Image (cartoon, rainbow, N blue to C red):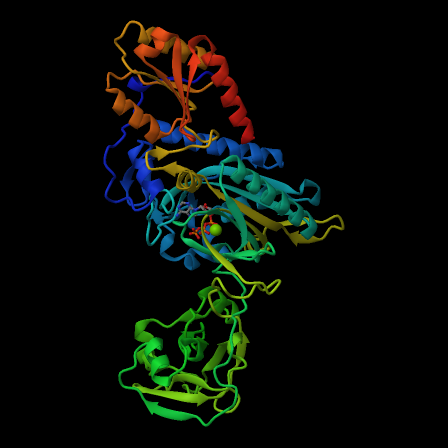
Length: 575
Ligand code: ATP
Ligand code: MG
């Protein structure tokens, strides 16, 4: 179908000023270029051009899913509570899950993800190993009542996701499809023109253990990454790490209790003790579901990684303000020596060779110096607990880690039998046994990807689309719409380009040239065909390449063929 649009017929409300609420480029440009409008916090309307780009992203994702044998379906967005109760996530999901009642008072939720509903579907339909593997996907809305919706489409509450779910009778089969999905995700990033890195990740709410996130690299990304020249890369949430440490004191010394009334921070403590901050130890308290108190000890200059903490102690939660009084411990002066009865000390492995710890004394205004594990206190568990940082050692090769920031555009997971077991989804094996399906799930943030593309592809004047995602490939810009030499030439080129299968829009507005150029750069059509009175008189038009800024004069009669060839060439780069 040809795409020949007229600006006058299209709702493209570009804005001259930067919207005050937009902190980052993609949010600002999506609003300014007239691609989206906000309806409520984290909830957006897609305007005609924005929607065209969304549809292009969806189409790329669709082609890649179809190519690996996943089949498109559409699952319900409103889901019955019972399924979520059965999987245990009705409670576990917390306030991010938006819940509602129907007129009979039955409970439902808005889908934040679709594992439950698809497992229930397959449970009723697929019975035999002969029907496996099975992979289904959809492109649909999700709703997550995010605590901090921000950055426009990057962290919305309502957003579009492609999610695929696969069902298998063996780990090999799951691994094979997981690898297919991961390769497809790499191709999707390439076709969207994204510079990206696959990284090791944490599986969070979804569950499972084998998982990879695809990160579009961007300084504005919310995720911090570490990577090594050996090829290993991880989200710092999940990154194993080797903290480089040289113990400040190598000889044990007696433990001393010191009065430290003015010391509130690790920096102050380090100064008081005359040691570097990394020679102090800070202690954070958590509790397990059965109420056992856990003291996590990490080097003073490092942060405790919540994900690693809950991996070391399943179910642990850091104490809330009111818990400190309940356990009768001083929040600002915790330490592993003489904690309340029954407390388990879990310490970061990097502290293992440290024989003289500077720590809180579990008493306000007092610290202990020279505390030694094994002599003055017991460590119940040594574990990797800290957030990885650039400069740490690579857990694979020992090299030095580098840092980057990224936008998580997609993630693949091996779920194992988590959902098939809790929801009773089984199949019959060749030997007649009943087994729960092995499952995988695979998500691409469609609308987040759109924002990520803009984050990576813009300049001061506006968006610089990769051809594959541009809402329209070419803009014809007649500089004087009522000029009888200019308009007919512009209109003819517009029609010819459309006939040559190029997506084209004509700026038929009666606006000054400056306004048209600014809008064309802002929306970022990859090519602008500028038709002016002087050029037409000389038999040429000016062709501007948005990405390079290059302008060339081309004889009017050659324009369509030349430009159509260039557009085809650039499309091919993203195939
Ligand atoms: P995040 O860690 O950023 O909150 P997530 O890991 O919870 O995301 P997944 O459950 O892995 O997200 O969902 C798959 C994809 O859906 C993500 O990779 C991302 O592209 C997209 N996505 C998730 N949450 C949002 C959101 N709030 N707004 C837009 N896209 C999102
Ligand atoms: Mg994720």
